[in-house]
Amino acid sequence: MHTSPNQADFDVIVVGGSYAGLSAALQLARARRNVLVIDAGRRRNRFARHSHGFLTQDGSEAAAIATQGRAQLQAYPNVAWASDTAMSATGDGEYFEVTLSDGGTVSGRRLVLALGVTDTLPGIEGLAERWGRSVFHCPYCHGYELDEGDIGVLATGELSMHHALMLPDWGRVTLFLNDAFTPSDAQHEALARRGVTLEAAPVARIDGEADVVLRDGRRLPMTGLFVVPRTTVAGALPRQLGCAMEAGPMGEFVATDAMKATNVPGVFCCGDMARAAGSVALAVADGAMAGVATHRSLIAELNQAA
Image (cartoon, rainbow, N blue to C red; front, side, top):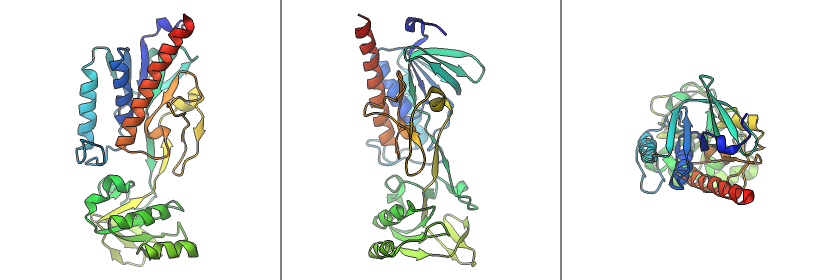
């Protein structure tokens, strides 16, 4: 490995070119830093037709937002783009090397990780095929479009109680316990106050648009379904670099401070992999903070060397 940060190929390498990574890279590009974005092309919300709740882009196609963001970023001459997978990374706080899928390496003085997370859904037949289309996680992102219809919550555990209590603001809610969650007496009372219907019969499969077919043969048509997935930080880089992890309600995520710095010097992290829950709007905000903080760290390094 080189010993001087001045020998690095780029000032900053951003790993992940979705909303958070694009936002981080944009701040750095506008600070006239040389930036490389490495992106494997697997946005977390690639299954969703539209994105909601992001100011000026409410109802836009999710892919179109990412495409427009990439085009605007790549208009800066100091930005390079690699449609590739970052397989591994090493570094000493001032110099980092990232190995790509073909075995080649690139180097940078700082790393911004924006790899996102992977969602794991319950093993119910027909559920995964409808993810992002009629099966959702975020009520703020998709609840309004259900037009106050019949909404099902597929229980996966205690956290499903939170879904069931929120969603009556968007429609008529049925909580399918599915042998995954048993409400306490107090929880029963809270659900009743919100007008939530409980269904104890196990779920056999999801059919049609969002019909819940129970094992006893009944079919309950729903306008949409909500489920809490388990999330896993995408890629091996955070653990390879020694980033501390934090337990969240849906799964682990990378621990950062308020400026999106990890415990590893020179490594910043943003987006869904660096927060307990996320959305496009939160990812963009996270990325902006990470980009600004990364730039500030480069300035601080120069001041220390002076």
